[in-house]
Length: 570
Figure 1 (cartoon, rainbow, N blue to C red):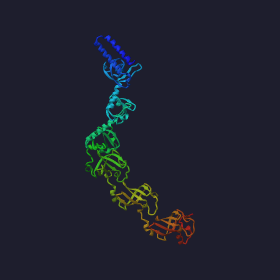
Figure 2: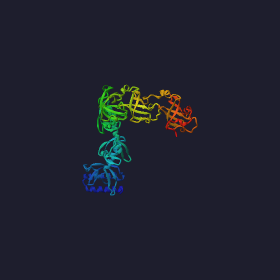
Figure 3: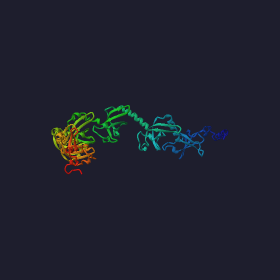
Figure 4: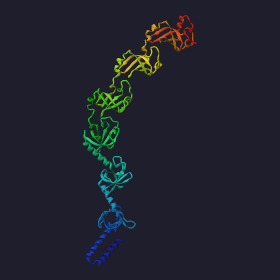
C-alpha cells in the first residue's frame, strides 16, 4: 500500500468516525488516539529494527505461555513467561527493556527477550565500569571442563581450575555456591567472555597480610601457629597467614633425629619469634627457647671428675649417649669404655636403656657437648704395670693369638703383651711364629719393655736363655772340629745345625778338594757330619765351616769318613 492510499484511507476513516461520534468531545479523544497509532506506525517501521537491539516496551497482555509487549511496532512482541521470576509482579502498562530477538518468525510474529536484554545491559555495565585487573565479587554457579563458571552481577565468567586457590585442591565441588572475590584477568569484547582468578586475589591478600603481620612481630614475642609441613630439617608453621620455620635444633634442648618425634601436621604450638627477615619475609621460630637453657650452668653443675648416673638413650658407631637430665646428654666414646679391651662397637659393653655410672671428662658448653667415661669408674690395671712387671721380669704366659710378626700373650686379665718374631730364638731364622708356637701354649718369657701411655708390653722368649753368640769364640774356636746335622741344602752349600743350636754354613767350595757334580754328591739332608770352624762373624751371626779342611787335616780324602754313625750317605 502506497503512502497516498494510506493517507486517503485515514481521511475516510476520520469521516466515518465523525459520523459515529457526533459529540465533538468524544470525537476529539478518539481522533487523538487514532493519530497516535498512525504516528507509531510510521515511525516504528519493522524494517528499521536490527535483531539484538534493545527496545523499551509496555506490557499489554499476559497469557499462560507469553507476555505480550507493545514496543511501538506494527504488532506486539511476545516474551516467554519463564523469563520472568515467579514472584515478579507482571502488571499491564508496566514498561520494561527487551531485546529484539527476531523481527518476525514464521507466523510474522515479533520475538522479544527480556533475559537477553538484561544480559546485554550487564555486559555493558561490566565493560564500562571494570577493566582487566579489577577485583569483583562473584558466586560459583556450576562446574565446567577445566574449572568453574562464576556469576558476576548476572554475567558468567570462567574461573580456571589453576586459578581457584593458592594451594592444591582435591575437589572443585566444594567451591560451588560460594561467593568470593575474584580478579578479572581477561575481557574478550568480541566473544563477550571474561576470565577471572581467585588465586591472585588470595596471593595479594596473603602478601598484604604478611606485610602487616611482619610489622607487628617482634623478636622474643610468643605466637601461636599451626603445623602445616614437616621436613627433615624442621617444621613450617602458619602464623595467621604467614609461614615461620621452626628448625629441628630449636625444637628441644634434647637430641632428636626427626621433628616428627615431637609434632604432627595440624598441631597447634606456641613458639617464640627468634628473628625476622623483612626483606625475604622469613621468620625463624623457637620452641626450646621458651624453657630455661639447661646448658646455662652446665660447667658448674658437671665439672670434670663428677660421677653421674644415667640411662643409655642412643648407640652410634663411635659410642653411646647417656641422658644426665632432660635436655642434657653426654657421649661415652668407645675409647673410654674399657682400660684393657679394644672396643669397636659400643654394644659390646652397653645396651640402650641400661642405667650406667660414668665420670665427666670434659664439658664444651658452647658446642653443647659433654664427654664421659665408664672405664674411669674402675681401677686402671696399667697404673700398676710398671710396679708389677718391671723390665727383666720373668713370667709364664699363655699364647692368645698369632700374627705374621709375633704372638700376643695375656700377662694378667686385662693386660696383654707381644712377643715379636725376632725375640723367639737366638739362633733360628723363623718365618712365622707358628713354626715353634701354638695358640694356648704356655711359655716362659722375659719383660723387655713397658709403654704405659701406649699400653704396650713387649716380651721375649729367647731372652730366657743365654745368648750363644755372646761367647761364640769360646764355644766354637777357630780351627776346632765340630759335629752337626745337615738341615738344608742349597746350590751354594749346606746349612748345618751345631750342638749349641747355632747354624753354620759349609760353602760349596768347602765341601771337597776333589771334583763333584752337586752338593748332594757330598752330603744329604739329615746326615750328621764333622767339619772344621774356619770363620766367625758375630755381627752377621754367621759361622763358616769346612769339610774339605777337616779331611785334609786328617790326611783322608775319603768323603764317606765325614759322615758319623748310621746317617751315612748312600
